[in-house]
Length: 251
Image (cartoon, rainbow, N blue to C red; front, side, top):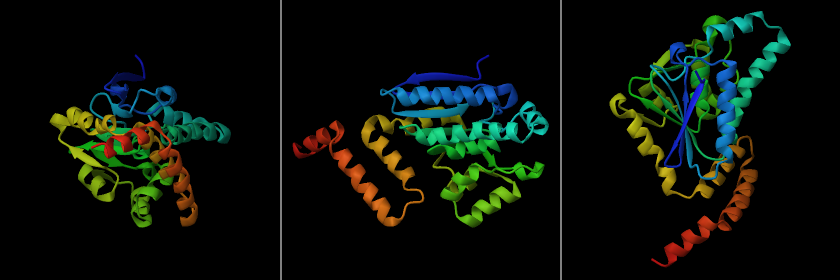
């Protein structure tokens, strides 16, 4: 059985984590296949967005038992390479030109919660559960902190990663980790309807906006403004912008 499933419809690529019997727990094969699918998506100029979701009852429960066993038996270099593999996945999600959206149902815990958090947008069912419980087994949600620190206040991020409790989707939305909550019964349709907006807006403008938004991390105010000038200039020269202006002026 394939670790992931892919399907494309209406310019949306849906990637399904396909280890339902393991609650879609992360292992090397799943991470590698997910990276391959994202790299292929980045090359496909017909796509407008990517959805990542889980098969079965959960989105993703984090690392599976075999992965934890591997960690406990590995030396420092092996553990570094293993951690770097996940780092590469998180980084890749931000490098993909188009929006990458997590569609979370059931549980998104530990590395699975990290995977969702790293996506550009997070959609959740009203019964979904989130959490970073790594500290309970002496682990550190180290790489996801790079994302949390940019999404949350320092004190909220500290609370989540040092107490390890899980929380519902309404709380995640209040914290700023979830964009929209939909009912379980209509979740797939609501997700597709929400994501379909990227079919209606300029692809090149979204690509440039995503790139600039994340490039601004760590920039000074003046540097960010200067980068905005560069992207603004590039956007004005795109076919989408020129046809959009022409259409507006001819109304």
